[in-house]
Image 1: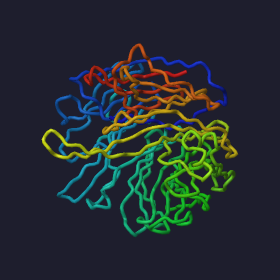
Image 2 (image 1 turned 120 degrees about the vertical axis):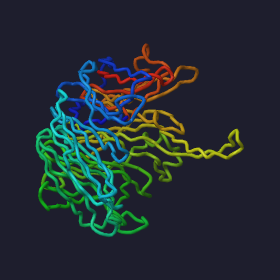
Image 3 (image 1 turned 60 degrees about the horizontal axis):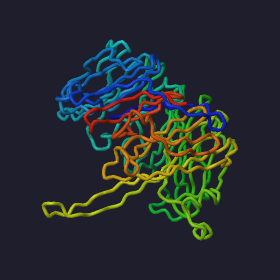
Image 4 (image 1 turned 180 degrees about the vertical axis):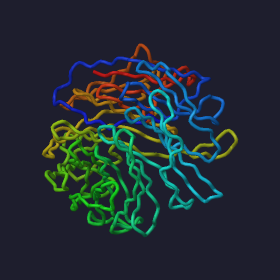
Length: 487
């Protein structure tokens, strides 16, 4: 099941941590005879949720929508489609009063791949059925995943496919839904770089529908110097052929991880990590602000200080110029003053082999999700503080590993699955204040949650103070969706 988070402009106040509290606003429990939905989406209009999935636990033939109110009481159920083995549920989202369900279906006899959508209102009335948005030839280059992103005000939707064109220009086909899904523009973007040399890193859509593409262009097949590749951003106006390039600087360093967001005024905030040594290490932060014309207003790089590096490296390693490895950027949070927060997590894999009871050697891939790091970067690009949240998680199945962040006006909450020694497995959290202070790990709702499995990738922040958290209990027999208010 996937809970689709929104993109929020968090109005972060630069204050120290205040008293923290969590309140369970509502819960939805699904028993062992009930189907666990594939998608869950929050409705900002009435503060309820919409789920999409199998209508019964015993069969996957019929796919339906279920609508719940703000207290997570069921309001209605509607069948959407009947499976035939050729239909893929791409995603479901809510735009204002409209629920959109996207499906891609293959037609082998016609050598065709069609993507269409259903539209319902929040009362369950069917407004559009199998409304086609694209028909592509059933060839390898067109067999691409349909992805989507919402604008910062949650009223404009971009869905797109990144086609495989090999050595020809990078090509994307897209649809932009305006006015909370009431109107749509379709188009195609041709990036003036060959597909086999250009990697699409991230897509964004502005409130007015302007499409932004961040990509990485490789000048060489093997990276030996920072000049062998670079990042760039393209801007595209829907319904036109115009593609404007907005170059990203910092060509003298290895940019190892980069992300960006678009604010309501269509300023671009670009931030990430860089290295002096290679593409898989980090030693500092980068920050750049581009105005709507694409001009750079702020551009800054700053190295981590010795105190932060000492959390991971010895004094000798720091003196020799060692850098951090295995950290990957997860999120960028826009602050109200133009600064950003960067949240990253340490991830790596190891392998283990053992002899099973039948005498066969079995290879295991073990996933490790360890420390979370947070960096506060000012609107001048200066690194204000860096914090480390200690954590150790490892398993062959990574469904319960990693974390969910909840950003409120005064605090950052990091929620994750954890089992202390000689204690039941439950959900824990750390609070990080807006001054970088990390509070000790505490159990979340300790009087209610014991021996549960938390699924962070199926959880999401839904407002400036609330999150939907998904976990199971009673040895997996009961799945729970909890709406929790923080601060």
